[in-house]
Image (tube, rainbow, N blue to C red; front, top):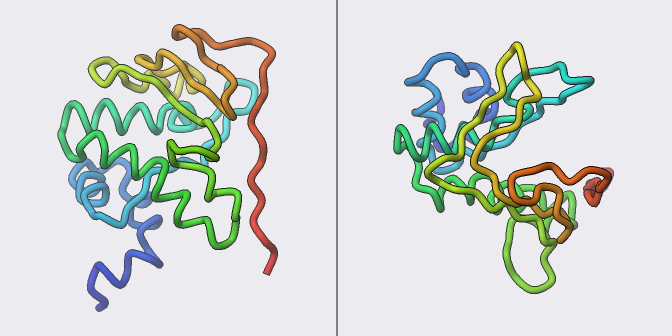
Length: 163
């Protein structure tokens, strides 16, 4: 059996994904310093898994504020900087993600740590999360004063190099 630290690079996604409904397993997975937060959920015509719309708000509300599994700065890094760093070698555009600095893409979420929470359910998987005041993608507001800005689509796909 390999120690957890050597197994994380090959099995972290599986270990977290395989225990979504087991609270102690989720907490143990999130507590490991190499675990990052992401979602591969897709919503199509309002249908899909609720984590497609609520992954990040769930981490911030439930695991940071309520259960104190992670600190707020640690959770933010696991949702932004750490995944960007992990992908930089194959997708150089990720060097401009997950950071607030000159030359970086202006992808920012302004939220209230006291109220942020996921609200999506299996019955309503596209329900917006609460507590997000403003969201900028490439410097363009897509959420302003808590409301979706209609008609803007400033996001760009990030492609990795083929090997």
